[in-house]
Length: 184
Image 1 (tube, rainbow, N blue to C red):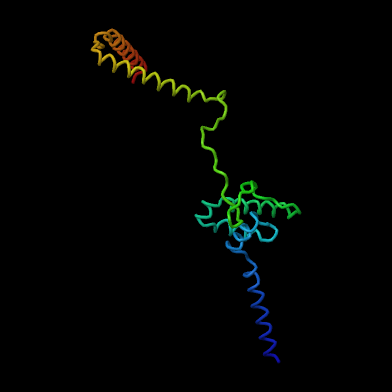
Image 2: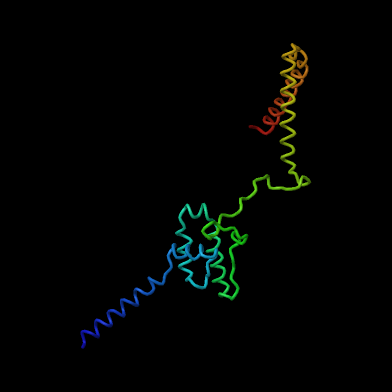
C-alpha cells in the first residue's frame, strides 16, 4: 500500500508541475485566438503569456498582419482595466476587413503625402526652397541663353566682379584690424 501511495503522490506532483506548463499560452494559441474573431480576450491569459506572445511575433506576421500586435496591446489594456464586460477590439481591425478564410485582413494602406491637407498651411520653408530653386534655374537658363546667343557676359559683369572684390578686401582688412586690436 505505501508504494501505491508514493506513486499516487508522485503522479499528483508531476501533474501539478505540468499543469502551469500546459495552461501557459504559446504564440500559436494567441494567434489562433486572434484569427478566430480579430481580437484577443485579455482575461483568458496571464500577463506573462501576453508579454511572451508579443515578444515571439515572427517577422512575417509583424509585417503582414500588424493587427495581431495591436490586438495583444488591447488585451493588455483589457487585463489592466480589470477584465470588464465590454470587449475591446484593436483599433487596426475595427474596420471589418476580413480575408477569405475569415481571419482579419490587412489594414487599409496609409496615404502618403507631405503631412498637410489644406494649402493654407503650406510650410514656409518648403515655399522658400521652391522659390530659391526656381530662381537658380532661371539664372542658369539666362546664362545658357546668353552664351548661346554670344553675349559678352564677362564684360557686362566686370563692374559687379570689381565691386565684389573691393567689398571682400575691405571685409578682410576690417577683420585683420579687429584681430590686431585683440592681440592675437
